[in-house]
Image 1: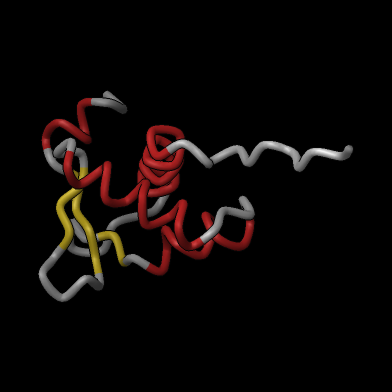
Image 2: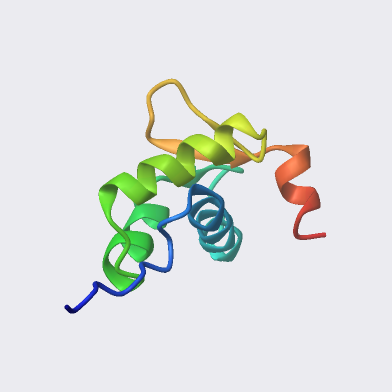
Length: 86
């Protein structure tokens, strides 16, 4: 029997950390990080799934690392999220 390989971002914690790493590498525009600058690398370069992306983003917001605008078009780092990379 052949088993599928494990996905690198299958755990929400791992996906959230990867999303934060990508967001940290992006140059913010007016302190905003446009969502497409995060989801494109996560989904297409890293090979993450939309479910993994959603779970990671939800966890990052719940933990207070990122704050998403009500329109859903951009995120900003919170103090706690910025502290992770200080």
